Each structure stands twice: as C-alpha cells, then as structure tokens.
Length: 169
Image (cartoon, rainbow, N blue to C red; front, side):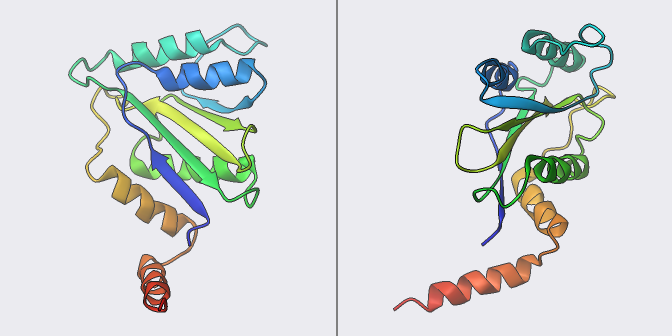
C-alpha cells in the first residue's frame, strides 16, 4: 500500500480552496505552511489575509480568460503521522514542480484537525506565461511521479496488490 495519497479535487471557477483553508487558519485548525510566487502581497512583517491571497490568484488567472476553472486544489496525506508536515511540503512541492505548476503562485496549508497529517495545495491552472498548465492525464501522471519520489516501482506495487488479491479464499 502506498504510504501517501495525492488526491486532486475538482477544479473551481473561484479560488474557494483559499477561503476554505483561510477560514481553517482563522479557527486555529490549520497553518499556512508555504507561500510562493505572490510577490509583495500583504504588508511587510504581516501575513496577508486569505482574501488578498485569493484575489492575487484570481488576478494571476485572469491573464487567460479561456480557462473557466483556474483553481487547482489537491490534498497530500499520509497515514497517521508517518510523515511530518515539512516532509509532506517537500514532497508536495517536488510533485507540483514535476506536474508543471512550479513557477505558479502556490499555497500549502497543513491541517491538524484530523488523525492524519495532510496538506492542501492551492494554485492556478494558468502558468506565468498565460498558458494553461498541461493537465492531460494529470491524475495518472501525479501517481506515477509520487511513486518515483518515494522510490517505489509501480510495477512491483501492482504485482504485490495482485498477489494480495489472489491470496484471498
């Protein structure tokens, strides 16, 4: 079984993922773990509000009006506490870079209101150049990349799953 799960949520026309996570931060149930590509958003020495972060992502995405659902929102989670939030952050950033989102404004939040450590990743499907980040077979590619990052062979993983299924009587 894979020790990490990467799930891409439905794309959205607005950046509701930022609001969801921002409200969790306000309640003390989450922490903004990483922010990149936002430039001088906010006041020096203070964290910007989720509304300003959401607005920045919307402005960034407006460079390509053809993309109707610019929000990319995904969750990277582990069983219990097998990976720390910082380890999840490192894996998540590598995964996003290899999926083609590396140069985009990106937010990573960690939640501590569940039994399992997990992070939420929110970014734009519009690249810095105004083009859509290629998303063809994105879910399949993300699983392959995750297996590579974890140093696991997908073929071996498949064989183990088949052997386990065939062992049931």
